[in-house]
Image (cartoon, rainbow, N blue to C red):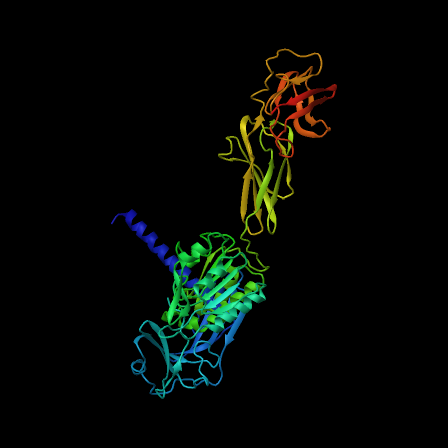
Length: 583
């Protein structure tokens, strides 16, 4: 072996050793942090959620999971400050399990259908998912089985062997809905507590909510095809692309993600959606609920929900599912972003966070308190000036005007410029302007006879609408110069007339001459003395120049045939000329 090869291997070994030492030091540091507050020998699982480092202990009695008994420590990830200690610990439980418990095989032999899994539990008196009254005092086998497509949870006393009843199954594969537990000759069951919990929190957050058991397709469709529903919650059998919401004669009513896509197409994305089907958030791409409720966007919209809730690794999370969503909604109600609320709920219920049973998609900076209004209607933009036919000169100030209205409010206006007749608008004039119908624009040094303005209005619901100048207008820059009307030299005084005599048509030219460089104000008036066009207000060099009569007045109306007067004013005097506009 060469010295270089030996040196490289030695360096690699040193790096590996260093990595092991760093890892061990990190683990030792983490354990030392926990030991400051917990001197027990209980095993804790470490995890990170958002800005929190969490240590979670699930109470076990031998092989039995003690439902709803746990200890949680939450630390600030950056400072190691203890943020919270949460525990639920029942008194009076024995230190060990009773001897000669029923074996799992014996418990599995008495259930209906094909056994999927079995687990030993100490069931909580406050259990949401094993609602037995009275709560069993003995350890129990909880056996999951598939009985002709139905998920069945059977509870069997592990001491006496008696079948005690059934648990509430997780859903397999604001508006709050719940579908049936079972289908067959008739439908039965519903996750009513979950549904009502969500509706109650939606109301608390300021979103008047309706909770509905077993809604049919038409009801779900009507809820989505509206501009008012901003919070949507479902808990039903299904997955990422479908859920079974209703029932008619034992036959499920199934909602598919592609139906959501169709229903929501003419409306804005849903601000908040909770997908409570077991596999509802396992996939989030196109064609899934997580995608279609957001309309494929990642701003101002969020979706949270379940993934794998019917699997054994989510057993403990399912037992905490109402508590978890209560924590989520409570943190949202405090004004936190949905993502921060999600992370805090994960930290409060690590059994859900550690195994990925709860998932998030969407805008991490989005909050729904204060109340978000889901506005389905975009603004309307009209009466844009310049509207066509105007001639605007480099360096002059020109007032761009428009009218933008909305059913709620127009929050801001963007103004952009086209020099190719409105095919593209690459030049930005202003962004984020208030909707005050006016913007003073300093005309840029651009040459174009096919210029147009486009106004883009954005409302409170982030809907946008746009409109542009009805026809082309002209921009005169310094590189093009001004047409002299075929006249050479410099006049001795102010000259003003039409370039081709009377009568003229809109779009014809007005000729004026200046004895020296000076500022020029040139306007067109009707016979009542009202100004109908501002033709120029800028400094011009000595010589002869022409400007074009716009085809529209300053208010956007077409120039009607008749008698008008053009007036030039300069520091050395002025002049007036008659203009007859023909049909």
